[in-house]
Each structure stands twice: as C-alpha cells, then as structure tokens.
Length: 284
Length: 284
Image 1 (cartoon, each protein chain N blue to C red):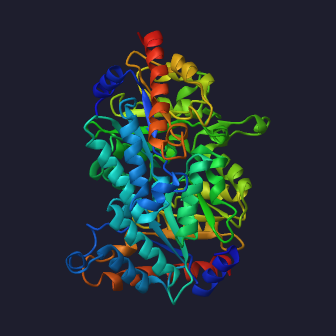
Image 2 (image 1 turned 180 degrees about the vertical axis):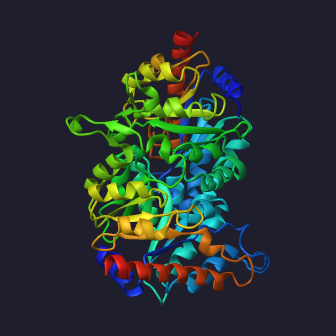
Image 3 (image 1 turned 180 degrees about the horizontal axis):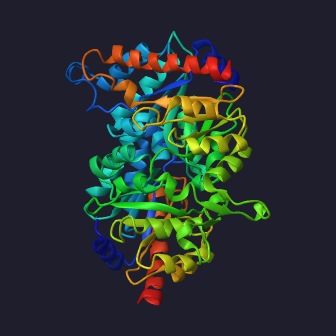
C-alpha cells in the first residue's frame, strides 16, 4: 500500500486507527476454544469484520502466534490473507515482528513477511544498523517500521541516552532514538519507512517532528498502556496526517463474553469518532 | 543446560564449536529436494550426525525456517527435538531468533523458545531495555544471549557510538555496546546471560573482558565472515573457557554434492582440532 493510498483511507474513514491482533488463545472467549478448529483465526475474523469500517490498519504481533507453533503460524497467515482479501478493504497490514539480522539473513525475513505473506509492513529493530534494515526497504508498496522510542519502561535504558558522534561535533549531542530517526530516515524515504514512537512519550513527540517532519509514525500504547489520544495527535499529526495509532487489548478484549466482536466494534468506533473530531480540529 | 554442564562438554570434546544451521532450501544438495518429504530436516539431521562429536552447540536461525511458513516451523521444531534427544548429546541448543518486545509480549517468545520448544537459549536484541529481556532470564538452565557488538557492517551505525550517562559523570564515556554489556550483565548473571560479539571485532574483544570477565560470549563470524579463530580465542577465553564460536556456511555448505554431510563433518573436525590446540595453548 503506497503512502498516497494510506492517506486516502485515513481521509475516507476519518480514522487513523490500527487494531492490534495480539490474540492470546487463553484470553479469547471460552466458547470459541471449545467449538472451533482454529479459534485464534475465528476470533480474528470476527474482530476484523466488526472493526474494519473504523480502522485503516491491523497489526499482527507474531509472538502470539509463534507460541502455538505451526498451527499458530497457520492462523497468522490465514488472518493476514483474510485482511488482504477483505471486501471492505483495503487496509494496511503490519507484521509486528520486530525482526532484524545481518543483511544476508534479514533478506529471508523480508521475503517471508513482505514477499510470500501479504503484509504491507514489518516492524524492525534498528540496533544492528543499515544492512540489517536495508532488505526491508525499496520493495514497491512495502514498508519497514523502525523502532525509535518504544512505550515500555526499558526504553529508558538505551534509547534516551545521549550519544556523541564525530559528525555532530559542534552540534548539541543527540539522544539515541533521535539519531535512529535521523540516520534511518536517510536509508529509505518517507514512502517506505515509518517509525514506532510509543504513546507514552508525549514529551518527545514534539522533538520528533523536527527530525522527521514527513514520515508516518506508528504509535502504540494508547489504552492499556495509558497514552492520551488527543495529546499525541496534536503533537504528531503532519500535513499528510502522518500517524497511525494502535490499540490492541482495549479493543479486542473489550468483552470476554459472546458479544466480544460487537463490543470490539463499539470500542473501535469510539476511537474512530474521537479521531474524526481530532481530524476536524487539528488537520481540517 | 547449566554453565557447569557447558564447561564440561567443552573440556570433554576439546571444542567450543557451535554449528549454525542456517539451512536454506535452495542451497542444499538437489537430490534431497527431490527425494525427501522434509528436505530441510533431512539435511539438518545428517549434518548433525556428522558434526556432533566435534561441536558443543548448535544454532538454529529462525529466518531460514520462517520463510517456509508452517512447514518450515515444523522442520525447525523437529530439528530442535532431534538435537535435544540425540544419543551422542547433550549439546547446547540456541534459537538465533533475535527477539525482544515489551515485557508482556517477550513473555510469549520466552514461553515459545525456552518453554514449549527444547532450546537452551535464545538470542535477544537489547534495544528495548530491561523489561524486554527480563522474561528470557531466570528460567533454570535457560539462557538469554544478548546482542552486544555484531559482526555486520551496520554495527558501526549505533553500537560503537559513545554514550553519555549521568551515572558515568566523571568517568570516561562508553560506547553503546559497552554499556549494553555493563547494564545487561546486571539484569541476570553469568549463569543465565551470554553476549554476542562478532568475530570481526578483535579490537573490542579485549576491552569486553574488562566489563564482563565471567560471562560466556557467543562469537559468530568465523569463516564466511572472515574472523580469525586463534586471534579471537586468545583475546576472549576466560577461566571457564567462556566462549562459543559459531560457524555456519563454511561447515554446512562445505560441499554441494551427495557427500555434504561427510564434508561438513570434516570441516567441523578441522575447527575442533584447531580449538583443541588453542585450549592446550591458551587454557591449558
């Protein structure tokens, strides 16, 4: 999906919502576990049908599927295909896999998620540098979403530390995540690279737009992790909207009963309506 | 496998060799692709039988299995089980998965690789900090192998940059990978944490032992990537040997013909004999 197509979907749906399919077999309603041959896929299918009119993107976290072995991989692949072929699509499909390896090996991950499987994007860890990220870039219509500043407490360990760089001599030193934004934004372009910045990082979102004014930002951590939608939107929206906000648990686990899909739909619609107001207010 | 058991195997086999099963279906001998229902597993099984007397560890890189979808996952799981149950074992079994996510999600990866599957260790990316690594630690006999300084060119982008830290004021600033070694070594202990340092980083291996004198180091990059075994061993061996050196392509692709297992065995034995001499020379 191209940048222009993402923008079109956001404007059409009045939404920049991403639904996170962090589908834990132990947290889905009991009746699905008892009655279905593939309860994880069945749950996802119903969540997708109930939320797709309110969302522009879906994020599948591979951890929740890998833990079930080959049957989990099958559920993940079926879910991605279901999204790719949905009659009420298109939607932007993200593999939240946080992969990266030496270039030779990253190529296999890129071929898997952005080639064989119908994902539009994959989340990528920047620690190993340019050749570990390169294979995910420059595939037409496909995206690398690079971790910059994550929403978890451990982000404070390394991501926010000030780094010295010879090229920056004379300049004020930068924090690691700012250097990641700066360097990695030049490996690809605003048409094949996005960045992850957690919704809990409001203080940093403002600074971020000075470094990457044009890039799309994927913002997880609204809801269960506590970030405020209005606050982050005001700070991060750019001329193409430029943000996709993810919510996982507060949507997919909105109810533990048989009405789980209905309640997920209502939770997604509530967020979409808030996004509609924000778009009217901030973006016009 | 405990630290003491790893040490015992090294002393018994006179080897600190890890064989990397980076098994690319397109690079294995053609006759296997034509005649087997699971050629990837068949290749691995024969490589393992031919090399297990010369190696103390095996490293399975998940990228090469994920790219084949659920059948690849099955080949990976069967390979791990084959290693775990091998009559000429025990060997130390590493999932080279380079995972890490927010704590809640890393837990699923830990349960997958160190719980359900019979891996002794998983490689972990430190960028997201302590809560992303924590779930891999403190499982009796299981290990997190944290990326510190990798062998690829992109390691120069962030890992070697000098970082400032308030706690270090007064002290000389450290490079990012040194801070990773320092901080992460205190999240667990030398009995549940190892570090990855590429064989191409000889200049840094000496410095490394000042920060983590006791930890085991997993050293990839000997062979195809060009590191010298004697040089890195002299710099990194500690009182418990403390290093595991990985070679992948130069062993498993030693021949493209029907004699691939025999040639892999010979390549592994050659490295083992060199390690035997190094142990006699350096370790006594």
